[in-house]
Image (cartoon, rainbow, N blue to C red):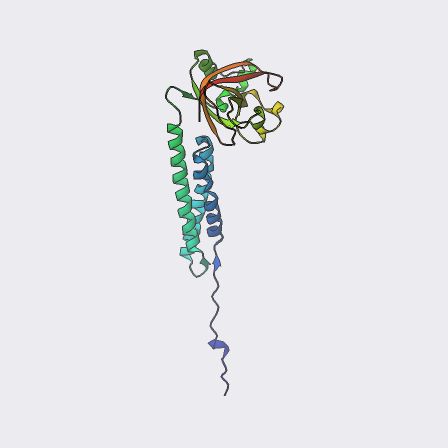
Length: 235
């Protein structure tokens, strides 16, 4: 005896597509891990632009979650959207908080923070034949100890251990690790560590402190003039 089923007895197959925003939000959230991972070594000025990543991830995840909640028979992926929003929020808060803490506590007492950006002359400075900006010139004239962060250019030293002099550059990108003749004078500092101080070659960010001065550049460094730092602090 055979049993037959009519067309009317067949159950319709329900299909719900995963909301695209939930997937995009989760991907951006996972990529946002770069914010807390780099917060301790990078400048706060680098961390804040990166924080846009978790902000966008959070916004997209929330929009996707609302769309899914409003049309549960059409969209799936609610858990993905929630996960993306939570991860984005966690990475944003922890990354910015840690970067702010490092920024507020990393400068030793008695040193004044400066940066390669502050050493770059403006257009008006160049037109007035003043390659050294006034704030930097005042620090040099007053011989006030400064604190600056940068990278050791690998080919500026012959050694990898117990280095006492090296070229500190603005970043580790092609700008400052490429052709030395194309590196501007304000993107590099010739560092001489005080007696008893030494460091090892690394690609990490170095925090250096000392008295800044400026003098003629050398043919080796291919710079018209050069910043020098007599350093008594390095970390």
